[in-house]
Length: 218
Image (cartoon, rainbow, N blue to C red; front, side, top):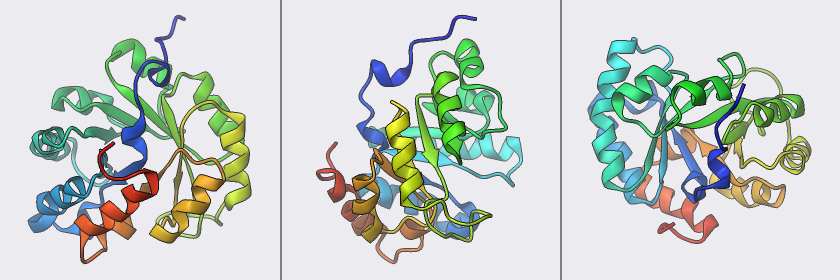
């Protein structure tokens, strides 16, 4: 089966440096769009809608509502696990789990989508690369209530980043002060949930994240 040219060989991936993952229950419906815009104003350029408990119809409606805002800031919108909804919403990409269909299959049917894959082991990372993913998250690097099982730690993160050519985003227990050591261990960027959404000053906190990667004007 012929696969598409990997996204990361032909386009700029700096927008992935801070990959912000939504948590609708944590943010709340009334302030969701405002919180998203604050993060975008702070420099975040990649947003993943990861609302596993939302009905497909509601997820599509949310994606259609968020897309104009994300694109206004020249950012990229990703949908968790649902390539069909990503296409219908005009999103930029889809983020797959290790149990999802292969990235190469998504690219055969939806060649315009950027495809990320969640990984939790060296073998999973290498498989995602073989299957034509554009980037991966590796988790959990640190202890976090959102991920089951013990943290992987920084040594496995370094092992993964040295074993694959793909951009690797550190995920799980990420906080602002941990970004430098993740970068030192080879991470291309970080994927963040609670540390940004729980901040009392989302815009400023997002800017501080972006400053780890040279500012907020990537």
